[in-house]
Image (cartoon, rainbow, N blue to C red):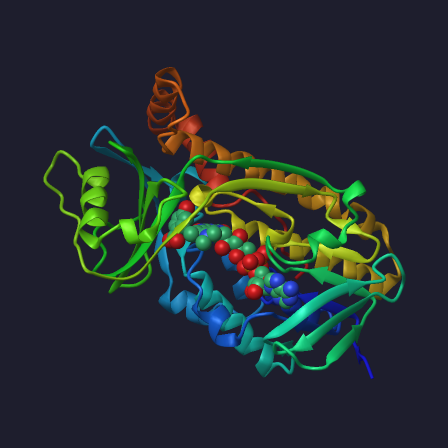
Length: 399
Ligand code: RFL
Ligand code: PHB
């Protein structure tokens, strides 16, 4: 007997979990399947920064209690170059919006716990996932529990593929109707978690000496930091001493400020790409979040774009089940892509301005320096950066 539900969701990342909550609020039934275990999804270190509307949405849905208690709320960010720091005051530049630092895996923990407590169904540790009959009114998801359970089936009205960049969702859209746009950057990020108190009161984005460094935070005792590196480099080549050496150089300033070191308990290297797949719907399959688009993390946009996609999708599904109105299905892709391309532009802009690109000429590097100087000296330019960073306008009043 197949499992019968209205929406079959593939992937329990921020997109899939948030969608399940939005659907539950609209009285729509769904089942999530996830290839990893609950412990794995709750332990994966990724994003840190939430846009103001994402925070407001979580609170509106009654999911923000721990975030409001344990998150860090900053007035703005600090940009650094030439051994000088420049504070961009987002609260002032955007009429009161803040930067919220609350780790993605904490968001995941909160969303999973609330979903399960509300009677939602999440099947963890599935394998061999196949999306079938997506062009019909009765699409199906085939999967196995664990690595070698018997094949099972979810029979649903619609499939939401929230299965990240490497999942099968996007590939289920026939290649001849899929347009993919991609840029791979010739640098990556080496990220660490360290047991240390915060060294600065807000995030520092620095472009100095060998290139980019980011000072971020997780709690009063754990800090998150990144440095630009060769994306093909191996983490074994980076001793703790070498990492601290680079962080000191790229974050030091003229006035004797000192970065506080601590025990490094997690480190890894990630590549950086910009990617968009158009369209994001085929038949009764909808793709959302990283399944449809990737941004380099410099603009802190990925999770927030994933949240925006599923907000749009939940509205379309609500309109269908309430009024049998399919109009929002037809506009799903275009509505999402409008915001996504603005997020892509901003992430590309921040990434290009703040990294030393070994493939660029000295002319282009001088242009990036001029760009940073312009951003910190012009209210118009800093306001443009601020309004993108805290999140472009989006309406959540109907949630
Ligand atoms: P996810 O989080 O990749 O979740 C997809 C889920 O689908 C599962 N899956 C499958 N399940 C069932 N069957 C299959 N066949 C499956 N294949 C895959 C996966 O196991 C996974 O659980 O995608 P989603 O939900 O779209 O969320 C996207 C965000 O995770 C991502 O955009 C952000 O992490 C990006 N990002 C940041 N975003 C922000 O908004 N603010 C930030 O500050 C920020 N910082 C970052 C980041 C990403 C980073 N990394 C590691 C790429 C910093 C970093 C370093
Ligand atoms: C993080 O804290 O992990 C973080 C913060 C800002 C970014 C990316 C990642 O732009």
